[in-house]
Image (cartoon, rainbow, N blue to C red; front, side, top):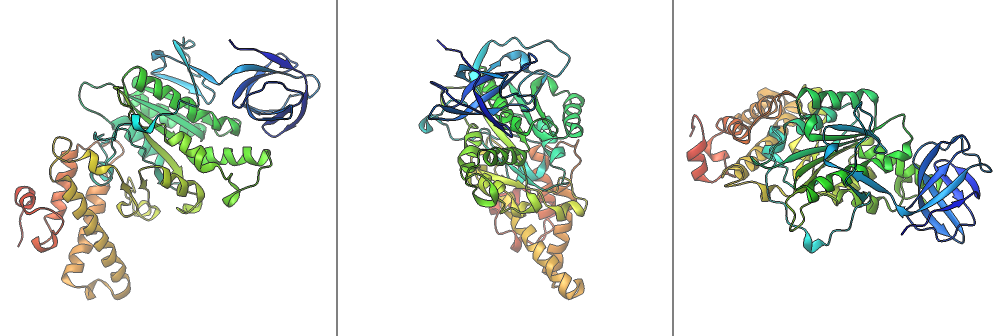
Length: 460
């Protein structure tokens, strides 16, 4: 049984925070309703309580809050979000309110937006391949069901296009139910329209749920948006048995909101002004991906992280890399050379790739082809750097061969249209087309039987 207690004892308003005094029995994460004089109400959440004071984080603007005439009602419960099957095909704002023209969602159940802790021994190791249709990801940094794999990008790079392409093209085994939950965190109106139009044009909106927190919405709302998306995903995965791909775009905007909130609370800042607890806060979001024993569904995360100044050592990508299982690294250099998607294999990896490839999942030669492509492309970059110093004519025949391989790899393997879907078999065949131009003696990372079976136009 919950107890609602009303107070008219606001002491101060600082940014997104409201401080209420003479409070009894307030609890951490308790939800409050702020009742304005004009009849409007806003929701908030208790961040801190001590010595009769409660610090409330307001989900929305704090303008119009009159210290003397505004009341605060403590609702005696945590933030609960109503979920339902009817949410598929719908678009919501950053607070979970429908913004499409359809009727309100009738919620069958309500769940705490902070999720429920999962016992580590209840987790199942991810092991099933998710085909994204993007060669660079499927071939070299394979996404596995239940994995959390961020996209490290920079301002102006086509991470939105890549995220939308994966959302449209991703598929699981035939006969299994699949859904996409998208959370736009601090994105522009143009970006929001882009994602919705992409989902509609691909006919995938009916299997999608979208939450849109726009750039001109209150920044503090960005703390709530990814939690709403993940609560929806947990319902679809663990209650309805669906395999859910969650796309959170952009986690950098989330971290900036976290820093703003920390500054308003006058906390001692950590590295570059971000709160010292940002690691655990981000982990509370990323770790909600996975597979739980006894449940048919799964949650896979693809999180977009734009690196300020393209700095991979910045606290946001740095901490994200520690928590997640790899990264897809987008290169400005490749982008400037006209490669789409500009995914640089030399800065990317999937730590769970070996679990999701091989016989019965992709193909027997997948690991060897990926290793050989990676090694050959690394050598091509060395040849490219050397040619910039001594000129192409001064290169050895082997260096010239790798230089040509690198150009072909970028044009044929990495590059593909944002509406072009490749199967894993097509991806591996393109890889073999490129590797077949190298002498046998250079193919040191592939088993000899696979070379004999798959190589084309053999050369000694």
